[in-house]
Image (tube, rainbow, N blue to C red; front, side, top):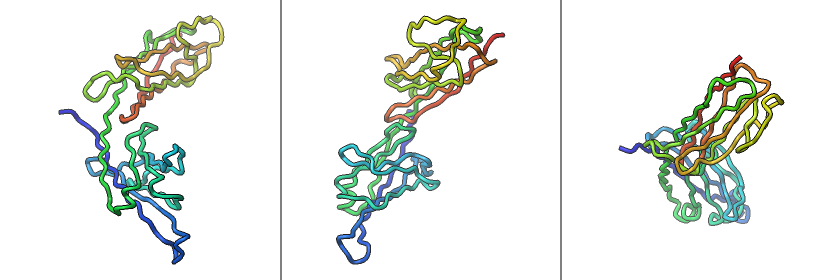
Length: 225
């Protein structure tokens, strides 16, 4: 049975009137984000947006999965809320109906898992020798996921451009980050080299796509003396 992580977001938007002056009315919205297991979704990002694309405010859910925005200017119909994980959009929630009805809507966010696999070949390598970093991204059922933004970062060395020609005896440091997207087979490849070299390098592989829970993986490239 296909496993899914489901995110529940309860958003309550309340209209209040400070004092008795209706002209001083201000809006505030608060809500709660939880996993399908009932546990709070801690540390997910919540953005308050205008329909013209402007971000008015943002915050991260606390230890109870709660968030709150105060002093909202304008009408409820001008705003919506975005729920994100690691920069990937999971769901949007319009505020207009919330203000009008006063009800607490239960929003189900179905977010699939990204699984990241990566390896370097050859490994170990000599100083000035390039290695090919291959990243494969699948969903929780093992199916390849195309269009995944993949970022690989290293604490040294140099990521090479496609078919880049380099002098293995020259200084090979920087750029330290490579970014691309997976192809139709869920594969992304890039080459890395170093000179001078440490004894080994840890490379961080991060995968991100809207509608998916992000994934990360650390691999090591060893340097042969």
